[in-house]
Every structure is written in C-alpha cells, then in structure tokens.
Length: 145
Length: 96
Image (cartoon, rainbow over all chains, first blue to last red; front, side, top):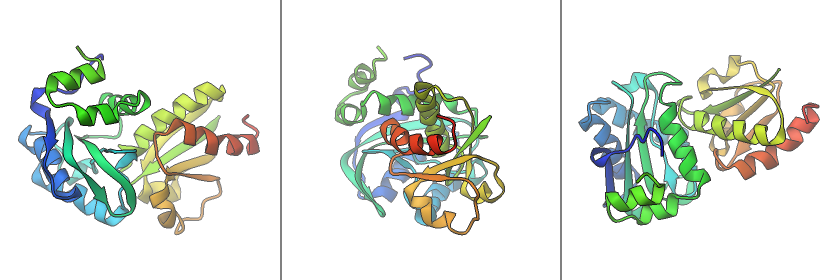
C-alpha cells in the first residue's frame, strides 16, 4: 500500500475495552499521545456520538471516531485499534471490532487516511484486520509488506 | 453539472468517506457529477441536486426544508447500497 499512514506506534491490537466509550478513549487517546489532538478532542468525539448517534460506524464492524477540528485537533493523525471483545453502540446493532480514530485540521487534507479506510472496506479486510495478533500480521493482511 | 452532497455529523469524516464511495459508483455508472461533503448543521443552506446521508441523521433532516431528493444509507461506504439507492434517483433526475 502506498503512503501507509499506520506504524508501530499508532496501532494497538486486541485491546480490552469495556464499552464503546472506553474504546474511543483508548483509540483517540493515542492521538493525544502522538500530539495530534488535545484531550478535549477525545471528549468531543464521545459527546458527538451521544448527541448525533453512531455516525462513526461506516461499515460492518468498523468505526472511525472523529469530530470537528475545532474540538481540539492539533494536526492530522490517526490510530488503529482492534478490540479483544467487540463493543456495541447505542442505535446500531453491528458490534465494532476495529476502530480507526483520526484527527483532521480541515475538510480535505486527511484524504489519505480516509482512502485507506475506504480501501479496507472495499477489499473486505475488516474481519481479517480484527483477527491479526501482531503488527506484522496486520501488515500482511493489508498487503503492506 | 449534477451536484451531489454527502452529509454527516462532523462533515469531514464519514461524509468524505461516503463521497469517495459515491464517486466510485458514479464512475461505474458513467455519470458525471460535482461532489462535496458537509456537516448536518450546514445542510439547510446547501445547494445540491441529491443529498446522501446516514440513516441515523434522518430525524435531524426533518427540521430542514430541502427541495432535492435525499438518500439515507445504512452503511456510508457500501457501494452496493449506494448504487441500489442512487440509481433510481439518478434516473428520476434524467442523469441516467
């Protein structure tokens, strides 16, 4: 895959999260650790999901937590986590196994991240991504090595 | 040219991803259109011939009076669903 936006530091596999909110705190918290977002961005995502419903679930098993840049995004960033136990969102009956969180600074410049996400869905990779035990296995699934 | 708008909560993630899938579907169908994405709070003043959004936003659309067809999707990047739901609308508008 060209222009891979994933690396060892922004991927965590088989994460244990008690519920969707926990999972977002972990995944979006990685954006904070990377210096791409402030804690307010994480809280903003959770508030937006509570207010607007699970609009971040874009395909079976996959959520892409994000919110408006003005909620505390510092730069473009992303993180991928897979969940040991899938989490359910209110208002959607599909358990989420893979979460790709991202921060954006405008409405266009994070296109590479979204292209990657859409490509994962179109190639039907979500289940296999969820099964990967190691970073190397993940790279193999997405065809990046 | 036909203008198609995709809409989600933040206006830059789900709607942008949806726009990419719509773009792919339109290419398959051989329909030319100008695509853009925005957030639900801006949709009132938006100009478009067709609007696509997630099912979970259907209720919030009720507060806007829109004079264009609106398509609600279960899955925003499901090309099969987009094609199924968009094709009749495109036919109705004479774009297909």
